[in-house]
Length: 172
Image: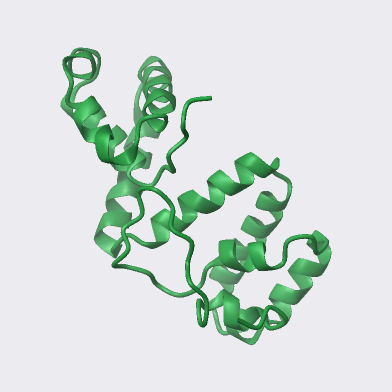
């Protein structure tokens, strides 16, 4: 891998993607900011942004996507390391989804935001708890009597979809 050339990393060429728990290995579109950021760890944020803007692959993207990636670069750069790694892992998981699966997750996130505040709070608590459950066991826990009694089928569906891209957070 040529870490001096952001295009080779940014486009996903010539590197093996890290495996995150819960990833779906079959679907992997190009363009991974997380891998690019990891390859340029230690480079000041302003210099990273300039490198990204000078990348020919980046410049081939539509302007809206360029803007989104620069904003994401700046947001991620401001995060504490643990939060940064979790965000990048979530983004990698999201990128591995098929377009239909990604749309389901986005639809569920939108429906979550439309719930009453008390239901959003209950879902947030459940989400935190379920993030500590290994991904292959989350659906079983969501279908348990505890969650069936606390959440409607729609709410459990929303949680399941949103959790499908959430990295595993082992209990501390």
